[in-house]
Image (cartoon, rainbow, N blue to C red; front, side, top):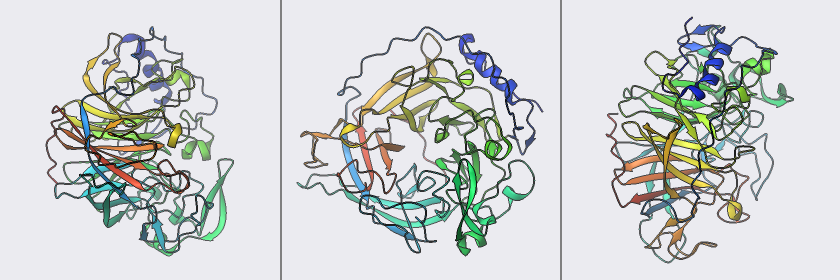
Length: 487
């Protein structure tokens, strides 16, 4: 099997780690264009890549960014429930919320958002409650929602509304995950009882799996941690996932269309080869593909992890945690191409806690992405939108980025947000941990939405679980030119 993973698009001093990484993955078998890994217990690490001289970092001004204003604000109440299998059986009470939720599924925010041609939106939550151990009764999939943004001030702090119209369940009805080929996973539907995790081993909970999950082979938050979604021209969906991490391909009805495609060298602690076969984890938990986006013509996908690999020798710059790759993927062949632009996050080179929250294409090779810390409420510091062009790099070959807006300091000249606590007049802020969705509305406007990490975080109102908030920001100049979808 041939693996093309050395990128001619990288400068030589950033290329060595990627070449070494290909060697680590080269002995794996494949199926359906994916790359399966052998259990590499104790495999020697590739040689570290020599680091370039750190590029000077511009000072971050809270008022920096391009001229803009808040133009819309809406939310879905944390109390909303969608009919489904009883869930929340493996979480504890928090912020006044007492699980389980009988015959109901809460919406723990939106980890991905797509604008539809009919004016509605496709909104995808993640795996439910944040871990493989506590989310086996949460059904993954995506919602169709209508958003009625508040666009004018009325003296209150009441946002517009989000109406949930329908839900599509992700499922393995075709049995790809149990056919003995490629990536096989024993999913929740294959067990009599829900599984939890102890010491990275599955543990029988003794609580029976809901028959609806078994009958439909529905995929739960214990099976896959879905975090990002990209719609193809044929109406199917590619999904970025964190437990592998994998790239998944679903039809418009949520049915898995083939085996998950593993990454050539990233493996999380929840990867089955790590859990079952003793392979070495090369990525931290919850650091998989938080972002997945097509380029302008739809010929390539870019999968972006939250952070650089945990194994230093696999990083673009071994001793600097700011540097990570955008991994280019060919959806036609279902193969990674080996062209992996290098991006540099804000923050320190060591113990960097800033992650990539989402990324969306805004035309051609231009993308907008979210950088965020994991703090919320008054402690939140880094919540920023940047724009990059894959064709524009710094002198050291790293993507040049432009700050669009500080999401803690959004201009709100018409006071759409009202008199929010802790926010000065004429401003609006998103003081949330997981700002995880950005999408194009029009040539001037972006939509941004949050994952609430329900029911454990109270970034907006202390003591109350966050609602799922969605805003729109309009920039004075046209920044984006993305053709409408044809689906």
